[in-house]
Image (cartoon, rainbow, N blue to C red; front, side):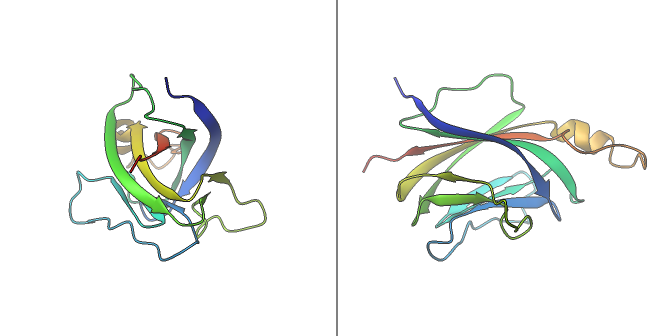
Length: 152
């Protein structure tokens, strides 16, 4: 049975409708198709890009989990997407281009190929309050992103 290796609970600034998880160990390309509104997760070499339901800036809840094998299914989320990514250094930072600073948050993986499973909740709720000028958008949208090594 797969075991949880490490987890990081944090928040992430969603800027212009997206946030990234990046490894600066090599070229980064998630390959997000911004024309396809149904596609909210993209992954590729050294990058995972997540697109929010909202195009405006807000703070989303984020939990990253690293597993030693396929993570168990997590019920109770509104949607799920699966992808694969390669990480060259294994240090995967949370939104380093936006939240760059002294206190960068990251998870450490061994370099290699990983399955990426992402869950989201709160997208509909976020869209429902988008035109309410006094609405506090922070924390409405929440993500769980899991990584585990792909056996080759």
